[in-house]
Amino acid sequence: MTRRKHYWLMKSEPDAFSIDDLRKVGTEPWNGVRNYQARNFMRSMQVGDGVLFYHSNCKQPGIVGVASVASTAYPDPTQFDPKSDYHDPKSTREEPRWSLVDVKFEKKLGRTLSLDEIKQHADELGEGFALTQRGNRLSVLPVTAAQWKFLLSLE
DNA sequence: GCCAACGTTGGC
DNA sequence: GCCAACGTTGGC
Image (cartoon, rainbow, N blue to C red; front, top):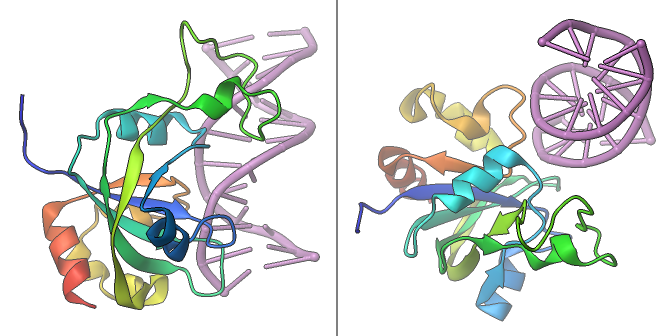
């Protein structure tokens, strides 16, 4: 079953894991997502989907690179690890609560598309752009093909 | 470091 | 099932 490529935006704190870190390792299991909506988005991802890599909680928040989905969703191993910050004692191997996908580096943008700049294009991006919706803290969110194309045209 | 916004938890 | 308390996110 094939379907059209979908697009996503995934946030990461550069102090913890930056676009340069992703370039270094190539592919990274996107562990630690502990929000059901974000998890459900990951479960609907397919290999080859496009990912905008976003730096959050830092000096210049914004889109810094492009990645792709490199696996379908599978259980996040950190949920079973008592020593991990992401350990979830309520999750079992029989019925894992949390999932992740592997994310693969594609490219780093020539410049950061800052949140400030993105907000200035609210009209082109439309009402439905989850990133700039008030109070939205989702770390994984969908991007339409039109939004994807527009955002990357800003580079 | 502050704090608004939001999700989750748990007592009732 | 309500909702207050608490924890987290993330811009500023």
